[in-house]
Each structure stands twice: as C-alpha cells, then as structure tokens.
Length: 329
Length: 208
Image 1 (cartoon, rainbow over the protein chains, first blue to last red):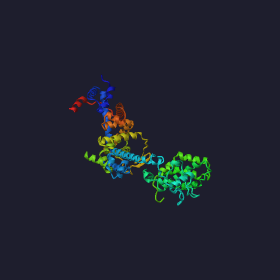
Image 2 (cartoon, rainbow over the protein chains, first blue to last red):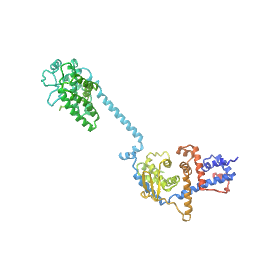
Image 3 (cartoon, rainbow over the protein chains, first blue to last red):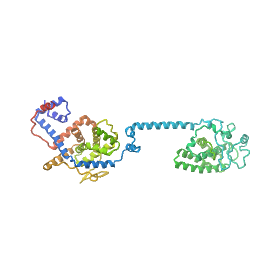
Image 4 (spheres, rainbow over the protein chains, first blue to last red):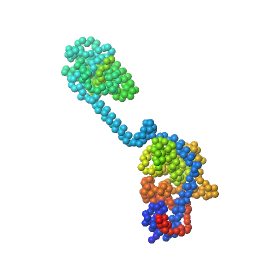
C-alpha cells in the first residue's frame, strides 16, 4: 500500500544515494505509481540542479584567482611561524624537531632525569652528617685561625700544656690580658675537646661542595662566624660566674654583620640562591649578638643560644665552611 | 601525486611558495564550499582564506594518513563550525570588510571583488537566480547548510557527516530532508507534469 508521506521521506535518501538496492527499487516503483510523489521527486532534483547552477554562476572567473592568491600570500607572510617551525629554524632546520617531536621530547626528558639523579647522588655525600666531623672526639676540621682583626691571633695552634691550662683557667696561659680568644664550646669539655692542632686535611673527605656554591670570601666569612658562634655558645660554661664581658664578641659580630650584608647583596645580585639563604639565616644571629649589651643577662644570652641550637647554626656553618683554608687567610 | 607530496613536505618545512602552489589546486573547491555556506561572495573569500591560514598553521601535523583533501576538508568543516560560534559582526560597505578586532581592506590585500561570470543576454535572469538561491541558502540554519553542502557537494555519507558535525545519523538525515524541502519551497521549483519515463527501467539501463 503506497503512502505518499512515507515515500517522500525517503526521497532525500534516494536522491543522495543512501538507500540499499532493495529499498531503492521499491521507492522507484512507488514513484512510478504515484503522480504526486513523482512530481515531488522531480522538483527536488531540479532544486538541487538550480542550486548548483547558481553557485556555479556565482563563482568568480579566472581573473579573480591571481588576486585571491596574492591576498593569501600576504596573509601567510603576516603569519608568525609556529613554535615548532621557529624552533626548527633556530636549530638550523634540524629535521628531528618537526619529524619526531614526541621522541625528541621523551629523549630530552630522560636526559634531564639522568642529570638530576646524578646531581642528587653527587650531592648526598656532601651533606652526610655521618662524616668524621660529627663522630665523637675525632679531630675537627674547624680551622683555628684568626677571626678578628688582621694580624690578631684569636685561636692559634695550642700546645697540649696550653690546652690543659685552658681547661683549668678557661684561657691559654700565654694569652695576654686583652686577648679575647673564643672560649671552649660545650662539646669541647674534657675528652671532647676539639684538638685544633691535630687537624689533618686528609681526614676531611667531604667533597668540596661549599667551594662550588660559595665564594672564597663567603667561606672565610662562614669560618669566622662559626668561630664567633662557638665562642658565644661556650659562654654557657661560665654562666654561673660573674657577669660576662662580651664586648669583643659584640664588636666582632658587628664587623661580621656588615660583611654578611655585603656578601648577601652580592649573592642576591648574582642570583646565587643557596648563598643568599645561608647568609640570610646567619644575619639575624649576628645582629642580635651585635646588639647585646656589654654585660648581658643570662636570659638575653639563653634566647640567642636557643636559636643557635634550634637552627643548628654552628653545624651548618661548619658545613658551609668545609673548605681547606686558603693560603691568603 | 608525487608532486603534491613534495609540495606538502616543502610546506611543512615552512616554504610558503610551496603552500601557495598546494592551495592553488584546491582553492576553487574550498571557495565553492565557503560560498555555499556563507551565501555571500565576500564572506566566502574571507572564510576560505581563513581555512588556508589554519591549514598552513597545522600542516606540520599532517602525517599523510588520510588524503590531503580529506585532511583539508576536516579543517574546512571545523572552520565553518567555529564560524557558526564566533561572535562576528560584518558590515559591508563597498569593498571594505570590517570585523570585530580586525580591520582588513580587501583592496589592501590585493583582492578584487569577485565578479561572477556573466553572459550579457542572460545577465538579469542569472543574477536573479543567484540572488534567489543565495537567499534560499541563507534561510537554512548553519547546521542544515553545512550538512547539505557536505552531502551534495562533497558526497560524504550520513555517517561521515554525523562524525564531522558530532551529531547522530538521524539528525543528519532529518537535517538534509528539511534543507532540501526548504530549498524546494523557497526556490519555488514546481513541476506540474510527471516525467514520462520509467525510473526503474532507467535504473536498470544505467546499471547495465
């Protein structure tokens, strides 16, 4: 039974050749049998012909295309090359960038990963606190060098007899009355005395990491600061005695503070972040010591000492200054 | 074909001349699609050149898995679909095309106004027909228009169109039915007498 509506719905499929052979034959037979459907079908096909003719007529003639191409050329010239092309140009047209971008990216990522792992492995021994430095009474590499004015001996190499004298009296026997050499640190008590004259560079097996990060001036600065802080920390031993005279430590701290500021600014300008951070951590401690009264109260001392301990400042400075003393020192 | 491959490789290396030669092979076809779609010669020019710019930007990603024209047609469809979505204001004033955020004089670009082919004695009739058809195409929705030209001009299957336009096959079928029916109404192509032939017999003759 022929249904015009059903047939007409299939006319578009018939026109666009989207019917299977069986349906196609059936629809064609129905068209032949229905006058209205046939007229409808023909008007549809004629419509498409008219559309095609109109579009064909609207198409510009051959004179138009050179201008079209010229316009396209101008637009292309205005077009900025894409990143890949710019990279390829930059590398002199290196084909792999355009031909194998993923493989290249993966290769670069692997290379970066390998470098990163190598760096971490290289870095680990340098910060290992199980080195001879922290292992009991072994000799320290702390350089017992001048930290005060040039030519002034602050912590000279001491004879064993001097050491025993120091243990008893807190000051070397040949020290002048105005020689304010740093006192002993708590760790230096009795058997734990850090024997400076036993310092042997051979046992100092840390890689010279500090030397690669800090300038020689900064390393010397850390050494001096370390000595100052040790001296300051050691005041605890004589805390119960009469009021401490810290005028020397204050003066030294002030000088180190100025140097610290200069070094920190230099590190900042150079973009040396590790040095900037290290110097930045040290600065408030130096400032606090420099601002202490000449005869500070135990409370004033203990607050600074607590911070020193909490921040492990002496140990940190020891690592930072882990560098063989320079001959010019 | 080998020449086209050579042009593609050169264009991928940034050779604009090679790309222009490549474009020359397909520019009429792309322009015709754009003309169908925009039903305006100026806009068709603008849109077809946008297709070429996009193709130029993307040619580095062409791997030759599909034919070059298939790849180009995909870019064309995407450009048309984006064109649908874009907030676009076009004022036509002489030969000046003004688009939001962009001021491009067609004359500055060396583009002459497209001039349709003209046969003197039929000039008026043809102009009327072209205007009528363009107005008819303008009456369709952008989606119907796109489906119509992909089917009628490009001969794509319902499935391919559905995939390109991210719609179902049923939507494509309905869209085409409405597009053709609407054009038939608008263009007023009506016949009173049926064809005096047997469609089935003609079909058989065609296949034999």
